[in-house]
Length: 109
Image 1 (cartoon, one colour):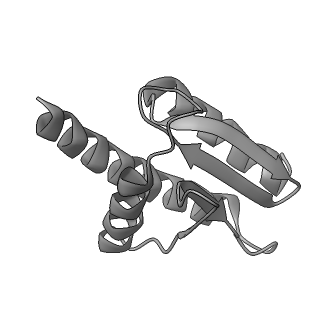
Image 2 (image 1 turned 120 degrees about the vertical axis):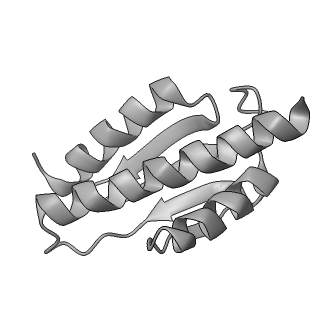
């Protein structure tokens, strides 16, 4: 698969598992996800996004947040990235996402 297709396919898998991932959008290798509350696009979750950026860094992955509401994560993988390295990055993202969504669920309870 092409880089962007592979990245989006992995993010769609995560989206099915985590309701916090709203829209996934991209053009080629430029891909972004929106983090939302309760799976609703009209409820951007900037707090979760900040927590995800920090958790990803603890896992050794640098990701960027952006967007008008501060709830978008941009993925800017090098065009020369290997499939193995991309998968490793996505594994780290998944671990960070599991961490922050579990913490958010506990805080809400």
